[in-house]
Length: 286
Length: 328
Image 1 (tube, helix red, strand yellow):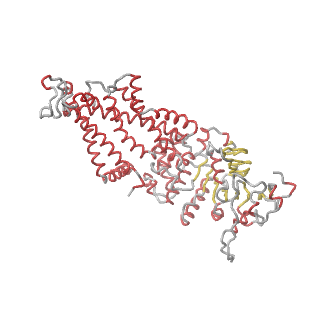
Image 2 (spheres, one colour):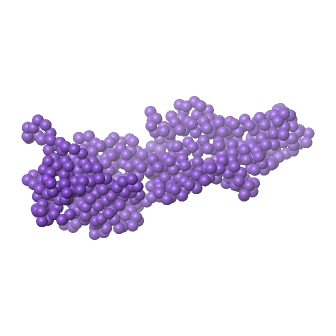
Image 3 (cartoon, chains in turn orange, blue):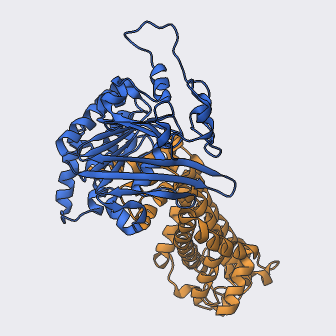
């Protein structure tokens, strides 16, 4: 019975989601991109990414190399396919971390108010004064360039926005009668936050997180582009673009393919986020 | 019988930077086990503030208890630590909220919300299965088929939701139940059902009830004692008989009864009480009811009335109080 209910709720959301054609397009794109990342090794072996063939330098797209080859004769298709792993991983991991940190800080600020709220909010204000990309740059510069530090840097730049958003939705949810009721039967604050406040504030939070995945991917690509992110020879999409800029006029496809993939995946996450906004809004239940 | 709740000279204010609201001004009453006490009064008379005070749920940022004690089972609720309060709330004192449409968490099934208080106050170390069973029993008790425990609040109608809210309040067998206008949001047919149910359950378990309402009909049906509140004071306090049939009343009580259409007497117009409640930030100096009172005398405007008492029937009015007794 219980399972059954849960199931119908999910299928209800899916039914509403399906009505939005562009959201479905985004979902399909997303499945393809995640599939590519998951089955990268099946599609094309990783060795192809780093294998340098002197005779094949800067070849245009052909049947042998779908997306052409780069200045070292590496197969661009293989590099783009395997690059999806880095980009997606960074996008998902940073968004998730920023979500968890943002939820804890934002919910405490919104729920407890007073001094707690002031301390958390003012610190976040300070972070928000610095443009996110600069903030990430500063963190990477301080910690050194590698994948872990890149993830930390991007998370840090994303947390303040999350805290603000979650604080504001928690503020309105915490005013609800059922929160007061929960207090009246002796529920502890932590339990109220995680069972009563956050689940009811989840809609906007989920939407914001899906949207932010694409932002995170873009900042990772941006940081890699200026050499502060993933280091060669790892095939991250931003790093691929960064390499390609020297060959902008002689081999534009080097720029084109990774660019298209960045664009498509970020588009996919945005469309899914948009679709979820409508599907999760209980007021639009019909 | 044992006294469950004793409130002595309780005053509560809400203080913000801009103004101070005198919500409750020196009220006292006590409640024995199994008794029902009705708190009647207009919106803003301080009924809900009193209830929240008993639960220790007053908003911390603004509310202050400036004097008095709330003794529950001999312990002062105002001096309890938050953790002690969490143990009392839900287990020993529970509350039925006014609006069933908003008092339930929309993302949890009704079963898990009823089980919540049991789970939190699990002193008897019930297993998950026993909790489930208690939840089912409680649901049946309030007249909801137990098969519906896995449904969500939005799948219930208003009356059914109020039953769920009552089930939540009753599941731990509390000693004291505070019902804050439990029937205001319901239509009349459901009102009667819900009231009968509360009364039945109360008789069955010997629970004491504070019934907060502005409906004298509800009071007549359910209460043993009645406190009429006005501007944060209990202006008249007595047994149901004292209030409904006694021959001495506070002018405000008379006004309240005058505002109800009578079935037996022929009258062309109702007699509402003229004017509005005083602004709780600027209460009048003398009797709080003086500006609206038909029997207002000179002394009413300058001195607070003392309490006239006869066999437990108390009235706070200059009309009755012996001038020698006028102290406060």
